Amino acid sequence: SAQLNDLAVSAGLKYFGTALSEGTINSDGTYASILNSKSNFGQLVPENGMKWDSTEPNRGSFNFNSGDITANQAKKNGQGLRCHTLIWYSQLPGWVSGGSWNRDSLTSVMSTHISNVMGHYKGQCYAWDVVNEAASDDGGWRPSVFYNTFGTDYFAIAFNLAKSADPNAKLYYNDYNLEYNAAKTDRAVTIVKTIQAAGAPIDGVGFQGHLIVGSTPSRSALATTLRRFTALGLEVAYTELDIRHSSLPASSSALAAQGNDYANVVGSCLDVDGCIGVTIWGFTDKVSWVPGTFPGSGAALLWDENYNKKPAWTSVSSVLAAA
Ligand code: G3I
View 1 (cartoon, rainbow, N blue to C red):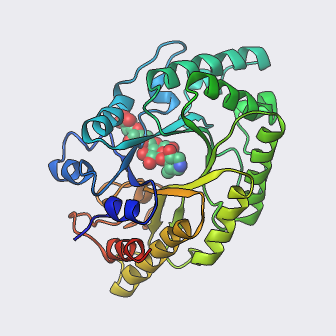
View 2: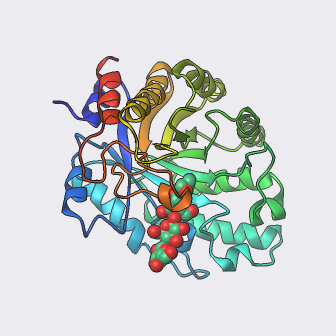
View 3: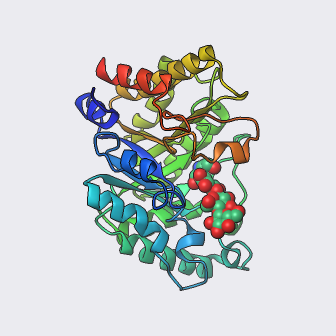
């Protein structure tokens, strides 16, 4: 039977993709064989390897070993690549987050980082998450060394620097809870408008999609939210989709509900012109950030921890096949 990326492409999406766990790919053959299939995944994104603490742990000293794992894998398999992420408050080395900067010195640090990291992957990234998670869940601005130094001016600075470093990469703002938190979604709209008003380039908004079984919005509500951004001339994508159970083990009805939620998310992308693809944040329940961050929650992905396809896999394949 047809696999998810093949079905997604037939349905008119550019790809169905997954995050790659750098700590797993070289030690688990079953993991590697599923990930290496372009029929399963048309695009890869590094779970951690392209973040600032990996790529520039010390000022001016760059390391691409971890990021290259995903880039090389994608190249070998003929898969696309999403690149994640440049300007983020988290996984930011202490020399940046704890430095005492002014606008000029922090602009110089951002410029060196963006030009080196994007330069290393130039021509390989379909899209870059230029700025990640700048809004907070209460609809305000998330504090960070960038916001504290520049206010909102760092958005345009970062997107302009990114455009110079790799003019062909799509430039994204990426965040979570935009799917159902209207105050935060409003803030993301403000971010886009701020960038556009400054004359800086932005191409897309990534909806991370870290959702919960039973409280995922309906297909039409999700589509309405995506259209707030396509109405601004942007493309959108689900970039880190996972839908976790908040109590485990999941019953068979909970597994069916998870499938329904997944189908609503993927269906909303199919319904919106300008929604270009769906990326899941890992594919097997064996390898997921969720239980470590939300103890007692988990089983958020499409393959179980023994690499069997779950009911949610079938729901996603059905909604893609029906498009
Ligand atoms: O690499 C070190 C290892 O050397 C060390 O021994 C080990 C001990 O803790 O830590 C390892 O680093 C961990 C890293 O993942 C790689 O496994 C970090 O502690 C851990 O914090 C880190 O978690 C990642 C998290 O981002 C950090 O914020 C998750 O894997 C990753 O899935 C998660 O991804 C984020 C997206 O980038 C942005 N959106 C939300 C999403 C989920 O939190």
